[in-house]
Image (cartoon, rainbow, N blue to C red; front, top):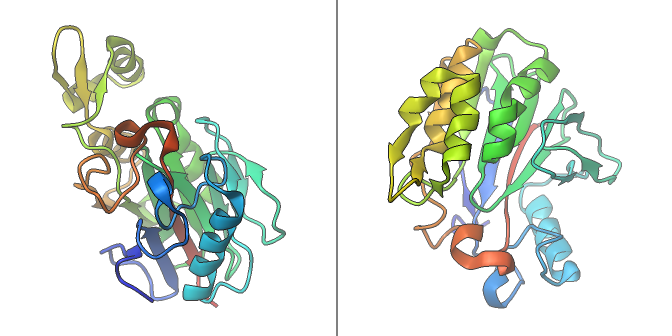
Amino acid sequence: MSSESYLLPNWPAPKAIQALTTLRAGGVSTGSYAELNMGLYSGDDQQSVQKNRQKVCEDWQLALEPQWLKQVHGIQVVRSRPDGVEREGDACFSTEEGVACVVQTADCLPVLFCNKAGTVVAAAHAGWKGLANGVLEATLVAMAVDPSDVLVWFGPAISVEAFEVGPEVREAFIRQMPTSEAAFTQGQGDRWMGNLYQLATLRLRSQGIESIYGGGLCTVNDPRFFSYRRDGQQSGRMASLIWIEK
């Protein structure tokens, strides 16, 4: 498989854990969706998206269908099942070997979880709304393991240099967690620059998680990634997957 198609986490996960984020190269989509678009509802040709998804499964020898989600920027967490049914939610978890958890992003933060024993995995889609409302905390509850045994990896997301938000976004975080103020810097006028990676880290540390890896990438400024903020409605989606290998 091509290293141009996948970003692999650098983290001390157990041997049984496989995880990745897809990049843009190596698929069949064209135009603004070129090439490895994973987003079925992005406006791309759906047959092309299905071929791209199948390529990922073949590249990584996933015999069972991953759990694809219909994401709504909420905090619902579903159990991943290999039945091919798309479920509504913004996070999923699995204790079953070979059943991949998947989230799709194009600026939002993909967060992958596993425990140190390698017996449970999860993936969460953390846009600012889901992050502020507790999607990471809800994912940890669903995993039902001691937070001190959890490893987390941040996939690619919009960086603080590109993530300009209004005062209502900043206030939404600070209301729930005053320490979130540190993740915002003053922009032009009433605008603020928000650090999604830092906000997610603060939320996770408040739950007792210390083993956090990844971060530091920018989907807007790095052409390897799709970016909704950069490309608008005709932006493709990356997929971040994690599973327990058979």
